[in-house]
Each structure stands twice: as C-alpha cells, then as structure tokens.
Image (tube, rainbow, N blue to C red; front, side, top):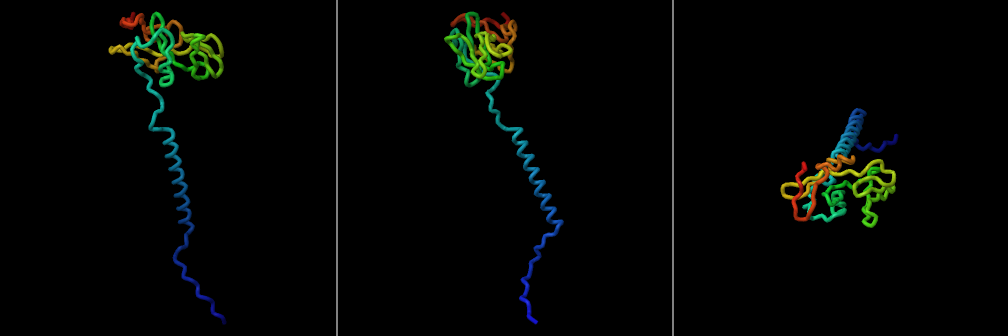
Length: 181
C-alpha cells in the first residue's frame, strides 16, 4: 500500500457559524452607527453661513437722496433716502425670492428671474410678484449710526411708513427726529 503524503497541520483557524454571525451583526451595527453619526453631523452644522440679522449701516448723513446699493452684496439690503427720511428695503423679490437689480435710469427695481418691477417705495408696478418688497426695521442708535434689523419686516402701506421702518431725517447736519415724532 502506498503511503499518503502527510497532511499539513491545520491551525485552529476554523470559524464557527456563531462567530461569523456575530462578526456580521457587528459590521451591520457599525454601519448604522456611522450612518447615523454622518446624518446628525449634516443636520446640525457647526457653522452658520448667513450674515447677522442686524447690522450698523453708518450715519444718516453718509447717504445722499436716492437708492444706495452699498449693503446689497453683504446684507442684501438697499438704503433709500428721500426728502423726508431714510428706510431700508430687503432686496428679495416677493415672487420667488430672487434679488432684484436697481436701474437708476428707470428709477425702479427689476427682478431678473421673472420680470417683476418695483418702485423705490417697494410697490409692485409690473410682473408676477404678489406683494410689495419688505422694509426692514431701522433706527438711529445713540452713537448716531443707523441700525438695520432684517428680522423685523413690513410690506403693508401705512405700516411701513411708521417709525420702526422709517427714520425721519431732513438734512446733512441736523440730527434725526425722535422715533415717536
């Protein structure tokens, strides 16, 4: 009889069915835990990419009569000075939220998305926009600076001309009228 070649010694490397299932369940739980962690990280970012809702816009005498686009890129706000005073308007179309452009020659704001047109007071004069542009709350601080608050908005005629949304100001060297005047 021929002798068979000696079998190599197999180290105790056999994986039992129970060990394999534990490894599989552990991998599945690890996957779900890392997915939940990534989802929570996505939902709760640690950085806010918006500008603050309130900002100082300088002194009233810094603005000449007309529309100022000084804060349009940073804060999405126009500062408008009239013969009677100053107000701030949020540069967001009331149709779908695009940023309208100011056209000095036509004395109007035009939305590039769908063609809404607004007066310098914010009233709709053309296009699909359903209501006027919003005015932001504005007041003069004790330091003489204008404080604009975009978290307080108004678009209804009659209310938007009230002291919270309109600062009376008549000249370069005079002080602004009190808020309750």
